[in-house]
Image (cartoon, rainbow, N blue to C red; front, side):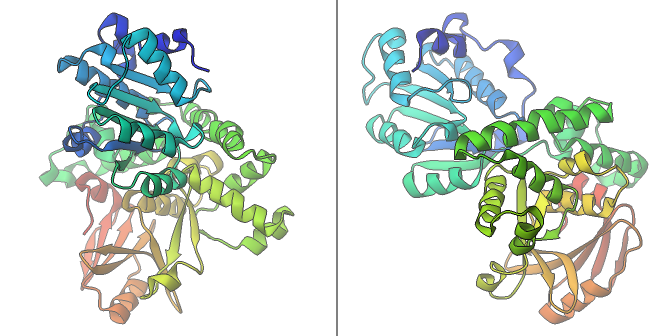
Length: 420
């Protein structure tokens, strides 16, 4: 049950009239610009993403902006379900009684920030009641999970919520935070520096707290203890009542050390001596927690592509570094980075194979990833079979155009923030 001291500790601006500088961090300008036009709208905003990407800090920044715009600090309430087990009714009841000292009515303008909302049981129904009963309350939600948050929001809060993934720093944000400015039309001048920066960016995964960290062992330990161990050892067992977190850890090690593995439930069940249904469920939990992402085998019929031969990648390329040395199978690490950057949904394998198939403007484009010499044969086969206008090979360093196949270094793709 919520206590007044808990509320006061989580909302220091009620007394101080501002958010303390220590909570504000650096601004995520790209993300703020993305959601800025949605802030005045009636709908709730759901922000989901990996642990340690800065969602709570972003909430504090929004709260500070509201205060600076003239909003009464006591009309802004923040509560984190990551810290306390409380019902939403208790939180609002205590706030109404002790802080507002008057009933919340349909005309009361409030700003409600609920952090780690997935830890509140039946959260979507409780949020729906508030949304429908109090039209003047602007609701902000955050969560460190994906599948259930999105599915629940769409089903139970249809028309009442806009959802946004709070991703780690993009490469351009990463450079900005490091104080590096590039002349976009002269990127080739920075080839050597960008190649090193790309490797650094992949190693750190865009996590804000380690942007300036130089020690690779500290970076790996941070990723393991602050992200992976918290999710595997705390979040998932608590959410789903799991009794076998060691199996979660084994699956993570299996997939993170072999990015791009084709998913075979029967083989995994045999290897780990677990039932097939247990394997299916535990992989679902890891996708839910944004630790794994799947890439499906492309077919002209999307219904078919969704059923067979899924590949599994770490959700963030930095996770590979926990189990792979920096140079071990760098192509697979680079593949994972490409999957992450493009949010790739498909690859192709049927007599020949290409690493990824991207869709844009009702067209499909084959993409191969090469850490060494750029072989174009597979991409050309795909172009001939499907009539795609162009194919791409993403390399670590090469750049050339061969007919309809464009070879481009990954550092340039990220620096320009586009491929097609």
